[in-house]
Image (cartoon, rainbow, N blue to C red):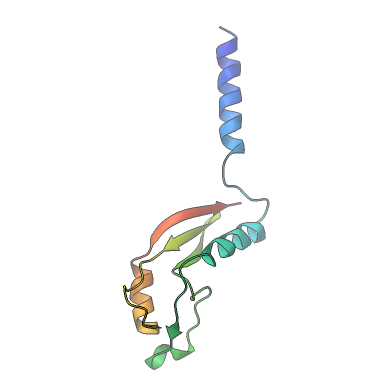
Length: 105
């Protein structure tokens, strides 16, 4: 009977060790940015009043946002054609992005 509590402690400890935790905020941010840079590349064309807005990592279909104690990696679908994406359209595409990765610290 004593082996069951020890086994549970070992199991919980090993699951904790496998989590996607980073030593610091900067490491989590860098890991997320590295992940985002590996997305599908596209050409971003400025349009209208949005010409002055810059999106960090906007050249791929992945981006990161800081939420509480983690960075969340999002992915969005690009149009089927190889035409450039305009800034107005990018806002809509990013609005439909799905969270896929978590980078905690």
